[in-house]
Image 1 (cartoon, rainbow, N blue to C red):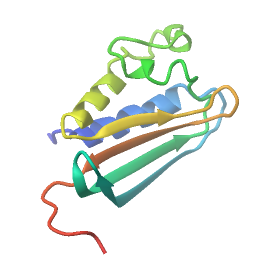
Image 2 (cartoon, rainbow, N blue to C red):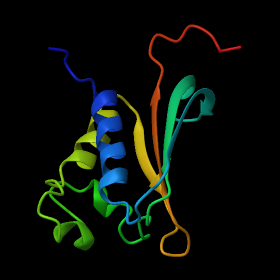
Image 3 (tube, rainbow, N blue to C red):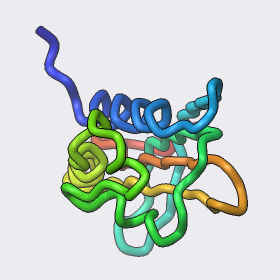
Image 4 (tube, helix red, strand yellow):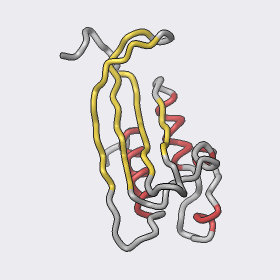
Length: 132
């Protein structure tokens, strides 16, 4: 049996939520990855891994964007569906990446526009030089 890494768990949770909460018969999920060089005053210069997962679902209101990362909290629309999960997935995802100096955020402008973009970023360890 393969052990799941925090990245495996993060991708599974975010993609499953995008599918589960989509409100139309069809939808799209796009995922991108890049390594970026960041000069930061607090952590210094280093390479970061950045994954963006974008969907075209109903989106997440500004009031709920941080709330979805709170353990055991489910949004009111999700509470009406008994098989919708426990409200632990995104909280675990954020804590796992924060434990290695990373971040998990969500960008969405619902209800003005559809969709949400989750951004997972974490510093590359054992960096010896800047990527070309």
